[in-house]
Length: 460
Image (cartoon, rainbow, N blue to C red):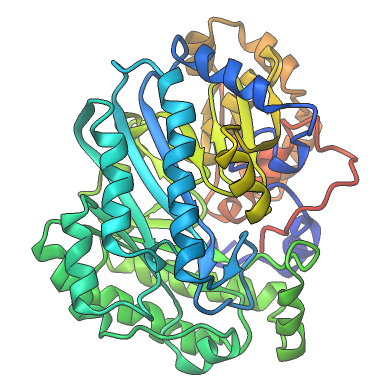
């Protein structure tokens, strides 16, 4: 069987809705019974839990133009006064959370997502960074990253990001084809992308590039041209996200149905086109959709099976921290709990102005769920599970771990017959063919989402 091509029979069998497993349990299991008081309690408890490192996330929800494909919590551009009020509330929210944290803990990661974080003036971003960096010590070379929309940024802004403390930038390219970008309502880069990358690298900033496949008007030939252009620029990391069609989350995506979305077979061909080009160019594949240069620390972490993952993407053990999120929709990921802020901008502003944490829902994991999360994280990050290693780490027998995660030998053996996984006495490994369906493999350990009515996207 050609491992670079998925037979149509397997697409029909496995291209079914399953969680993305950026968290376990998935975010649509969060409940309003988890309150701000619960979050405050969990923050305090997190000081004595592992990992001890700190990771912070800021959600900046505003966009100058809303892309039709976006499934994130984003708002049209607001007035300068309203945005200033939002930034002020980010500082106020930090003032509610930071005193609950042990000041001896070290910052490993700061990440900005959106929306469009670079809608903020660089000076505002610098002040947010300083608020944290002046409060806590940091590991050597913490990762301070921001997602950027290059359609609106001039040379002065790019230069300012280095002065604001950023050392990693994610360029939201999505596609180099102007007709595709026009169809999805996204503005192309203001400056040549190669010039942006050169400017940032001169200032010591590492480069990610983000692309989407599965958009209207994309063809294998056009996407090949896009990926070749990216390879010529040679970013440190390149991500090929599968477009998730979830119009029940964002009705704007219905516009793309009118333009015509590729079917699962074409989507799979788009990904394989990119994958083959990137592997031939010397990139290494991380997880489902990340590709990194051989010298990247994610590549080294892949080799020793120490990759980790959170809502912001893959990270190494060196930069893995419990995540404390600020802003609307922000999700904090602690060792034993998740807490999500309200999605409503005005509710968020009013709550924080009144001195209240804006938590709207969350989830506290029991011991079994913590073990299942570890099993699924291990699989999603490393494409394998060494049951003996997990047994040694968790101080539980292999039989106990398998029992707690509902190990289904029959289902996994069926996947093995289909060529998706390899099974041995103490090891489960996802094959090259099976990587596209690693979410399906992970779901075999997830008793919560079996036979449930909740909505998820498809793997392809």
